[in-house]
Length: 268
Image 1 (cartoon, helix red, strand yellow):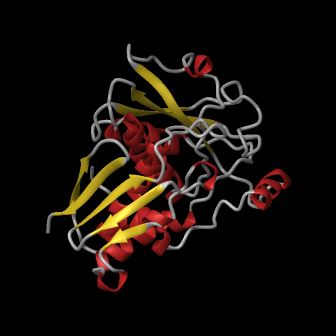
Image 2 (spheres, helix red, strand yellow):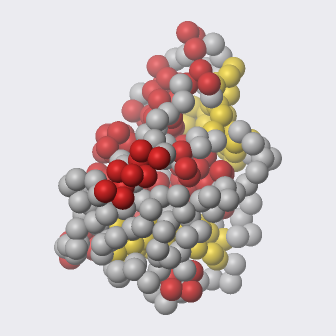
């Protein structure tokens, strides 16, 4: 996948989960951009795809979105779809889905990862699925209110979604004072990844030429969010890779098994 490094790296620091939107439709140019963007993106990772849906998601959403509050006013949405027979479907959906999220952020639009609190049967009215495909997650897409709504402020106070653990709490392996620049930049970007109820389930084992990402505990899905921890780690994979590219380090991902998600090895 060709990553627009500077564009998405900047978006990492700007991205916020937004639940209140202006009743303002996207322009035809923006709609065409997202349709084309998703078509290109869907050739990059096997077993997963993203469909941009230029329809109001009101009937798709079930009201209160887990512990996050109700999503209001979004004019359109995107569906993140995976082949459930793919062993790494959750990680792949996180990786590819966050690509869409960062692109939307770069365009000045609001988004929000939504797990199980939507109606797949309503999504099916807009999208055709393969035999083994499932909607893993969706995101509303639109112009967020300039000021956070009262509901958003309430839930932010209840759950500080932007508070992040320090790197020394989530990293092992090479001592921090020996980290190359690419490692530090990559981990700082990964640290800012969104996760369900801000649980931050990723753990990193660090070496000079590679970083391995693992899940902190083996339980697959949060009861509060219906989002797999492996999906959270897939989001962190993309952030980590963007950080590496920002530092001039190109690499490739190798998927692993069990509690180990994947390892990123630099190739230059």
